[in-house]
Structures are given as structure tokens and as C-alpha cells.
Figure: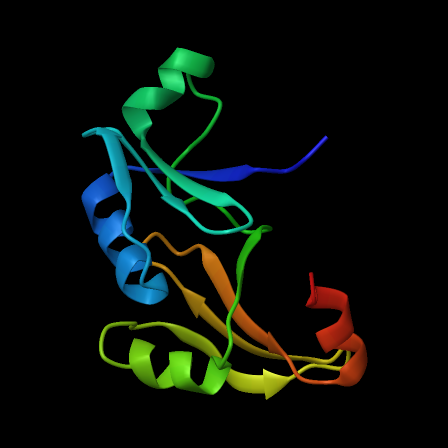
Length: 132
């Protein structure tokens, strides 16, 4: 089994796609006005409108209601990403900080309030862990 995708449900797909395209530099592939995905080398971030929820199970997901999941992006230079995001991110939760487990992390909120972590491994153990 492989985790290949994570989906965010939103009431404004275009706004969220714009945020993630700008934050990651990855262009989204649009399937319909209700669904787009951003594909990276390891996984896909899918963004679907509230209208898509009914196709699975009506009422099973609500937009802008996440308080437990953090979306994480491995980046080469988290401090550089911090400088790039300063132009458009309005909610920085933490500035780049080296964590006890060896990653230098930057935590922000996307326009729907979802937590997003950009991180760079900086200790030998963390670097080895993410070297694939």
C-alpha cells in the first residue's frame, strides 16, 4: 500500500489552488472547475470543491474545518521558502525553527486555515531519513 494523495475540500478551489501553486511552484492540473491536483515527485495534493463531497458521501467532509492534520512539504531551503512566502502568506504560525527531530520547519496556514509545514532536514540523521 502507498499513500499517494491527500485531498482538501474547499468552498473556493481557485483560491486554494492559487495559494498552493504560489507556495510550491507546482502548477495544478485541473480536471474540472471543482477539482485540481498538484503532483510532486512523491505525492499529490488534490483540491476539491464542496460539490464533490456528495459524490462520496454527502456531509462527510466540511471545508475549512481541519484542526488535526498538517500538510508537509520537503524543501531544499526552508529559510528561502520563508522569504518567498512573505509576499503573500498572511498567517505565519512559526518562523523557521530547528526542531528536536532534526528538521528546520516553517509552519503557516493556507487561506482555509489548514496547517502547512515546509521543512528541510538539517541534522545528519534527518538528512539520511529523507535521502531516497
